[in-house]
Length: 313
Ligand code: NDP
View 1 (cartoon, protein in one colour):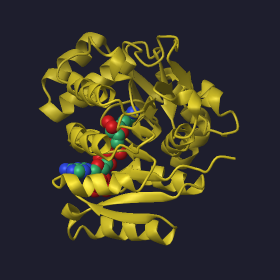
View 2 (cartoon, helix red, strand yellow):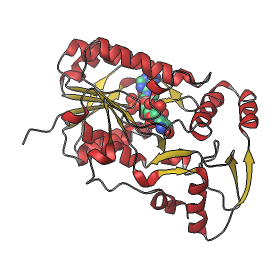
View 3 (cartoon, protein in one colour):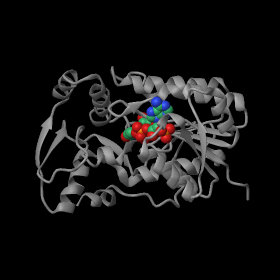
View 4 (cartoon, protein in one colour):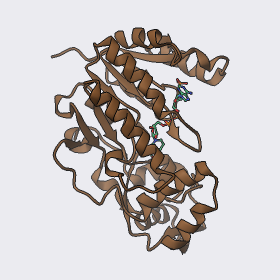
C-alpha cells in the first residue's frame, strides 16, 4: 500500500481547522500544523497547538509575512490543507492564501492543495448578491491562482456547517434551537444540506490521497441530511416532544432586513438568502469534474441531522 501523505494544516486552531488536524491524525497521516508567530500570547491557541503536539502533530513555525518560512513549511509535506478564516462576522482572510499559493508554487513538491473553501461552491455563485458575493469572488481568485500555478487541488464544497445552521433551526443570528418559536424562510420548503463539522474534516482528509478527487470539486451531500427548514424543525419538534410556534419571513421582508444591517451581517445574510430562499446548495445535479463524498467513502458513518440535534436537548 502507498505511504500516506504528510499533511500541513494551515489555520489549524480554527473552528474547522482543529477538526482537520484531528482527522488527519486519526487517519494516520504525519501531520504538521502551522504555528504563526503572530498569535503571540494568545494562550488558548498556544494551548491548542501544544495539545496537537501531544497527540502526535508537529508544529511548524512560519508567518504569512515571511515567504521563505512558508516555503520551508510547505517543503516538509506532500499535501497542504488550508482552513484560514472566511466568515465576515468572525474573520476573513481568504486572499492571504495567495501568499500560500506562491509558497507552494516555489516549493514545487506539493501533490495536493485544499484551499479554504468548505462552503457553497463559489464557481456556481457568479450571480450572487452583493455584498455576500465577496466570499465567493475571493475564493475564485484563489482558485485561479492555484490553477495558473499548476498546483494539484481538491475543492471541498461542504454545504452548511451544522453548528451554524442546525443550531439555530436555520435562522441567522441563532446558534441554539428555541423550544418555543421558529421563523420560517418563506414556506420553509427550500432544501439545504447540513454537515457535521467533524464529518467535513473526515471527508476532506479522505480526499487528499485519492486519485478520484484530483483536480476536482468534492461536494459533501449526505443523503439523509438534505432537508428543508421545515423538516429540520420537525426533527427538533420530535426530539423535544413539542410543536413550535411558527411565523414566517417573506423573501421581500428578508431582503429589506438585510439592508438595515452592518456590512459583516449583510455578507452572512446574503449567504442565508441564497441557501434558504433560492436553494443554491441542492438545486443542481453534481456533474462531470466533480464527486460526492458520501458516495466516494460509504464506510464513513456520517452524523445525521437527528443525531446532531440531540446535543441541544
Ligand atoms: P476561523 O474563523 O475559525 O479561522 C481559522 C483560522 O484562520 C484561525 O484559527 C487562524 O489560524 C487563521 N487566521 C485568522 N486570521 C488570520 C490572519 N490574519 N493571518 C493568518 N491566519 C489567520 O475559520 P472557520 O473555521 O470559521 O472557516 C474556515 C473555512 O470554512 C472558511 O473558508 C469559511 O468560509 C468556511 N466556512 C463555511 C461555513 C459553512 O457553513 N459552509 C461556515 C463557516 C466557515 P492560526 O491562528 O492557527 O494560524
